Length: 288
Image 1 (cartoon, rainbow, N blue to C red):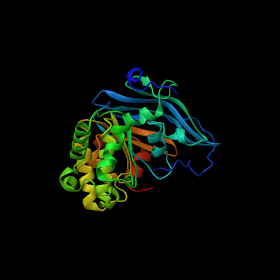
Image 2 (cartoon, rainbow, N blue to C red; image 1 turned 45 degrees about the vertical axis):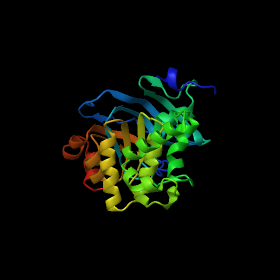
Image 3 (cartoon, rainbow, N blue to C red; image 1 turned 135 degrees about the vertical axis):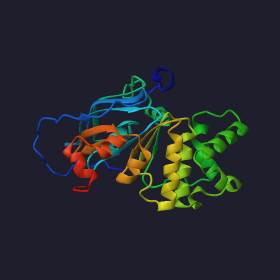
Image 4 (tube, helix red, strand yellow; image 1 turned 180 degrees about the horizontal axis):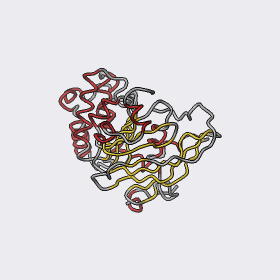
């Protein structure tokens, strides 16, 4: 509960669609079969503005726990903008404004009583380009647990680091060089290190913004295998431009277009029998 965890004193790139389209009534969103698991995050009428530009229009979406939900759509459609609303990353942009309501386990994440720093520990973020700290492999993973007080001794911290690296599928590759620079790893290893860093603070949700776009096919396959394993523990939301990747790793898919949520449902249903013509045109490559 936020009342217990979050109370404290207090890579779309955020660009709005370029076309200055006239304001029209919001189209109806097509919802497929209901999520199979309990809802972890519930967004209702979420809109995002960057200055005078509106990037997201009245998005309502339920995201189930222990499931991979893929956000798909052409560049600039608002999917990464929506992703960032779920851990208040837009708070870091001075001219950004978010309206609507986003609940996690039934509580409003934008409430004044919610500390965004603690929220981001619970809702981890993995970006398009691997961004390990300029520290050792060990210190990359240990940083979060240390500052959040999740380990009371060196031996306990060692255990957190080991478990996190194992869950990220990286332990066997780095166990003998934990004190080497994290930036010295390969691109795929760096991305798994970043994932280990995210899960070390015991998050409930992991947001991934095109986590494989900068990786080669072998590294991409490893990350996809890891995502499939992690969904047994975490709610995962992934933005991807790869239709094949969305089909491989997700159980739920939401299609965005021009800042609006068009259709959502089971991934197999979306890819084999979409109900909206725009969804069909996108997944078959007619536009994108």
